[in-house]
Length: 98
Length: 331
Length: 108
Image (tube, rainbow over all chains, first blue to last red):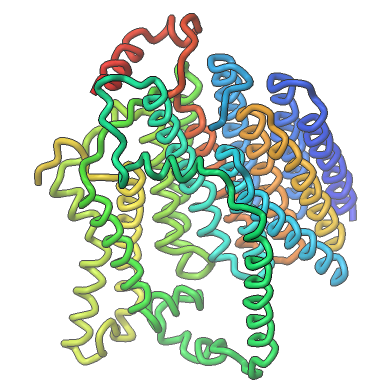
């Protein structure tokens, strides 16, 4: 019961960050500020969801797998945000796409 | 629960169709590529809802790891060809009507005129109507599930899909492996791989991430291969994951990549098909039929074939990604 | 509980479809790539939720593969060649030797 309540609360909190990330992606004015949208969903959104799902895991192997997924997404998100920012910095924001 | 599931499926379906439509209708190639990546993600979710986690796993590995990178690199190549043409250097050869420039011209032709819309729509309606009629009159059948379940104990594995792919209908898998090899031979026969004049992103972030990710990818690939005996997974998924790790290396350090020596590379590429063929011929001689196994030997033989197939698929995917025989390869 | 997981997954699917507006509108390719990256993370989360809602533990493996390979497209995106380079960028100052080799390759 307590585990279920914790899961629901953590999942709801995670969803809020996903909503915030999407809102940021849509509403922020340029690439550099939109980078923040991505990190909200990666770090905190997925992190809270993973933490919430850990209370439902059936064993330590499942918990470690969830943790690994979160760490991998963190690494991917960090690298991608860095590289997109770098490319935008060197090539300009409005390069022609054709 | 059921109503919510239907709602989820409808939203997913609308998303898939919408993304596919915008992807095909887009005049901006980069936008089309990103939409295609998103399409692959939604498609994996659709496979999940169709209760086919094996295919979802393959779609995840191929869609996320290979197709997106392939399309983006192709786009970069097209751009560099375009830039060369625009700059009009004197030593640029005149455009070859069958070469890559022809493709570029085709890409930049004006979109088709409006009057093609009505015939296209009526054609789509007719085909859709035929499909619906065909599905409507499907005879009721239980499928092959009971047959497979009845024979699971002699298959050597615990996962029905692996049993079908590697035992009951092994020749399908054998021919699929052969197709991958033939595709690679086709790509190699088109010429040598010329190094793309590419620079990886400067800075320490990318090499650091690679040092973390590539070992994890190898472990995950082996895990997915191993899981194939009792859960979704297997040679194709594992090969795609390992291939994606190789592509990541190719992308990140195009210059420092060690050139694979010719003979081991060829042995690795053909290992899957060759081993499969050997086992199949042995089955024929030993009286189990082509590609049949003795019951006691089914598990070790399947495992052996899966390992060789994983290696071949991973190597073939990387080789197809760089396209063309490696430079300096004269074996 | 599984109704709750499914509702959460549906909500996340909705955020993906909303985020597609950014892909369609752009304006730069960096914006679109960022959106794709965000969709990848959201897709991983949806898969984790579905694995509990549908009681299909293999979906965690699918999520793992997505998480593992999420970076490949971004690495392909950032390869820099073919585009005209601004003459005075940090990239240029740090890597003169790689710029030279690039030009010699262009002369083929």
